[in-house]
Image 1: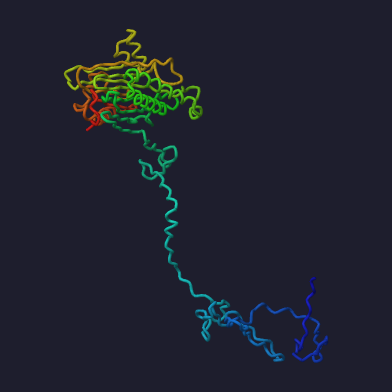
Image 2: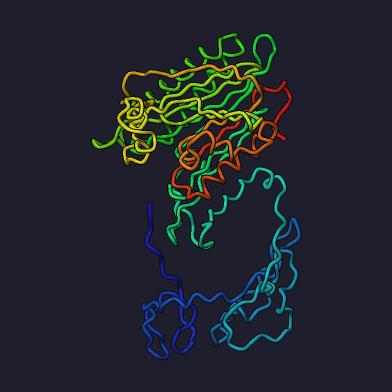
Length: 440
């Protein structure tokens, strides 16, 4: 149970220091009321412990002031007495007898700290598992100052940054292709696939597929990429199994059409689709070259040209466009020059996509009687070299052995001509060279 605090007995009068007896209520000398308890003194420690006693002995505390000395005990501030650390050593600056700053009121019981501290070496165990610093922000290629946002535009000057597909070059054995965004479009909506393999009898075969996205449709760049990959993979799988190249080309175009159709069902297409846009769509053209056979296939207005090494022999265009202009010429309603001069010339009548008419892949096979070069391209090139003769003048003399160089030259010609469209070119030598031979 709790108790009330009891008042301590006084030995002398707090007022005049006259001795008093126990039980006195008033001082006999001055009449001071001894029942009044004075306020407790301020909490200033008077002594400090200066050390620890040896084991087994009691700590020696300073003796109390003798009673009846006639004056209250002297009060000491904490800074007035020497101190020691935990080992009994005098504190720095406070050795016995050392002069203390007057009236500081602060006990300096630790050494003065330096202005700077040495950094501890990193723990190699932690460094090994530390996370890598984040990649620095991409800087604009135009102003060299702004940060590029997630959409590929500079936050400072608004310049669109180059994308991965803006310029693509690839070689596969003897065949090579180059694709470029051009100078007027904000993205590259073309795509291609190139490859080489062997037929069941071990003879070499090379292939190229070029697709051109329909700009008025949703996600044309995704459509061309999906179609080219599907067609290329189908050819590389069917030819080694012994499928006839022309049948394999037909199957490749059908597979490409299905890949593009599937894009229309994806959520990304649904978000971008609007009443004035069609489902993802593209054109396709491809070529397969063996040791004695040249097969082409297409839907749309991308083309294949044949350029013999003997420039005295005539070159040829091996495909017919699925376009308004081609229909006008075929019907005898307009000459080729008149049809392609019309603003409706490039309106396509055949394409791959969920909104397309009934799929009708075109395929054809040829057996050239001499070596030459096969050029597979989008209209981004043939707009600047429409006839077979014009194309033959651009194909480099060593195109059959330097296919990548030739593809670069052809793309460069389109860019020099204005680069109004995406441009993609694949170059294959005929006949297909033995395995191991490639572009020099």
